[in-house]
Image (cartoon, rainbow, N blue to C red; front, side, top):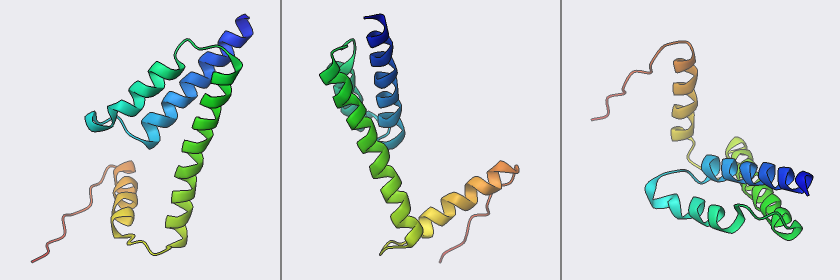
Length: 103
């Protein structure tokens, strides 16, 4: 029984991490996190564990698919994405990108 509780806790923690990472933790998105907490906290039966694992896999897969589409440039405007990537790169060496003047 203890092994099943440890497994349930790990799957629950992975699901919460995926929800926070891919859905976000803003106030208007808090209902996703609340749903996960109500549905899967302290639930150690195998059906709930499998369902939580599947939700985690789905969230991670959707995020990976979106990144893949961005990398292939499938009908998406990538300027904001590139600004974000360049900003992260500049920040990693202690710099900031200049603000571009647009009349």
